[in-house]
Length: 453
Image 1 (cartoon, rainbow, N blue to C red):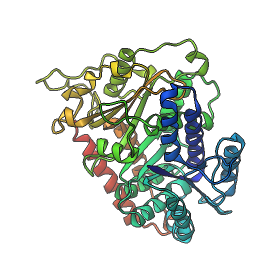
Image 2 (image 1 turned 135 degrees about the vertical axis):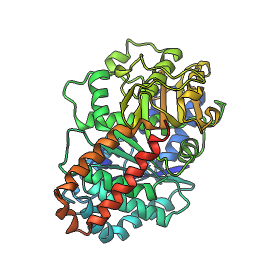
Image 3 (image 1 turned 180 degrees about the horizontal axis):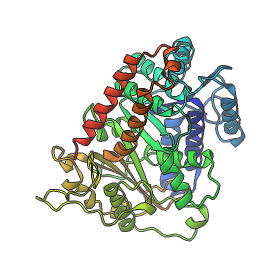
Image 4 (image 1 turned 30 degrees about the horizontal axis):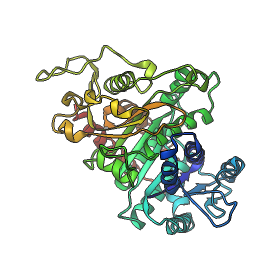
C-alpha cells in the first residue's frame, strides 16, 4: 500500500528528503537475487509512483509545504541531482513569508489561508495511489510552520480522510533551546495532534546528537547528519518486513500493522524508537554482529531508557516475578526502569529466525494490565537493511518520553506564569484559555503514562 508523506516546514522537508533518498538507495542495494525484486517492488509502491516514459525516474509520493521557498527549492534540487528519483512537478506549496517561529501564526493564519491549496495537492497525490495505506506528516515541534501549520494540516487530513491512518513524525528540539518559544510550540502541537493523529513517533535532537557523536564518531555534527539518523530509524520500520511468523510474505500496510501493534488505547499515542547497531561506514567495515548481542543490548536500552547504546545502564534490572520493583526513583513520576504498554520488535538480516526474543516477552517489562503476549509484536525479514548485515529496532509505547515531556511542560508553565511572549500568540488568535486547555491536555498525557508503572 502507498504511503503519502507530508513534508512540513524546514525540518520536515529535510527529514523527508533524507528518508526518500535512503529508501531509494536501500531498494537498489545488493542482496539475495531471489528476494531483491520483491523487496524493491514493495518498497517502490509504498514511497514512489512510476510515471510514463522509458527514462522516467520514480516520483515520490510526497507533498512539500513551507512558508518560505528556499528550503523547498533545495529539497527539490537534491532529489533531482540524485538521478534516481524526483518529486512531482506540482507537489509543493510555498510562500514568501514565514511563520516567525510562532505556532499561532502557522495554525490560525497560514493554515486557514492556504488550506485549500495544500489539500488540493494532497488530493492529487492520493488519487494516484492504487491503494492508500495512510499519511505520514513529518514536522518539527519547535518552529512555527512545521508545528503550527503542520498541526492544522493534520487536522484537515483527519476531517477529509477520516478512515485513513495518520502517523506524525515529530522532531523534538534540543533541551538547551533552539527557539525561545519552543516549549509553547511543543505543548500546543502535542495537545492538538492528540486529537487528530493516530500516533506520534518522536525523535529527540539531544538523543540524535549523541548518536552522531558517540556511535558515528562525527566531530562537527550538522542537521544533515541528524536527519540521516532519523531517516535510518524510520526506514528500519517502514521498509518491507514480514509482520507474521513467516519470512515468505511482506506485510501490505506498514502503518495499519504498526498502529494495530502499538496503539491499543486512545490515551497512549506517544511512540519512541531505539535501533542497533549504528556506526560510521569506516567502523562498519571491521565489525561483526550476532543476534544474541544485538537483542540483549536493545532489551537493556529499553529497560534503562538508554536511547543511545553507549549509555546503557546494565545495573538496572527488572523486578523478579511476584516482587514489586525497587524503590529507587529518578523523579516522583518515574520508576527507575522504563515500563511499556506495548512494544514492536523489528529484526532484519541474515539468520533472523535464529534470534531469541524471549527477553522481550517478560511480563515485568509491561504494565500490569497488559499481558505480555498481547503487548509484544515481532516483525522479521532475512533481507538486510541499509548496509547492515543484521539490525534490530524496537518501537515502544512506553514511559520513554516522560522526562522530556515533563521538562517541556515545566518550562512552558514558567514562561506562561510571567506571561512571557503570550501577547505574540494572542495577536494571531490564541487566547490564555486556549493555553490553559492545552496545558491540561498534555498534563493528562503525562498522568496517563505515569500510571503505567
